[in-house]
Length: 363
Figure (cartoon, rainbow, N blue to C red):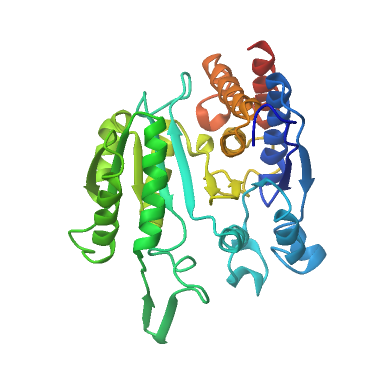
């Protein structure tokens, strides 16, 4: 799409989810609207859709088919956290809403940044990295088969899970990692366990190395997953883009989120070539739901990632500018000393959101 033509009018889905979702998702929508206006971008049309416990109660499905059909007509969407462990059976034992949506739309790349902000209580100041996590296979039972879960029990005393790694999926996620690194600090670290899982993660490592040959300007190295955790604690600020399979990526992104300041600031984007879903890396936190204690930062920054993804895909400079404005607003708010409880501050969800909106107005 040319930037000289009429501006693209975006429709984005809004899925509040469970727990703190109905608090943090509207906060993200408010900040996105504020940033879009500041960037001179056309307003987004937000389309709220049912999902989670309320959808079970109203429609008899945790992820209604009507919701999936409606999402297919949008440019992207925001997904709040779900509390599938609290769903009644049979919904508790089914694939959760996030997994259902991810599989349905083939969202193979899970992009998880970890950035330390001034005033953000970082364990490792200077952290600014991105974990590129393969999102469709590997060692998680809900991701490695077309049908079923990939787990089975031949007897009540034996449980077996399949871990699947394919060349095609490795090439696809490796290319995403190197493309991203080309726009950042030009370094990719491959994380694997090829000393033990020689065939599976060995294939992952080797394919990533092969793809690296297409990007001579990007430096590449690799580490075993156990060594990587130690390196991150000591020197997370030295890493740029980490690429890995889904289970390792899930674990490492929780670690890097805390190293950067809190899992409450850890954003995430699930994407394919033509679809993207903003989803905070943390869970639904039902223990603090409805008490104005939630940190909306991760959901706000995830939404900024969606705006940036759309802006890049459509060559829409106003949208990419809005994404930068969101991050600048969050950064300025934290630097001024306004943070939620998990960040060592005293602000609630509403107050923090209002402070970010005010910061955007002052930029």
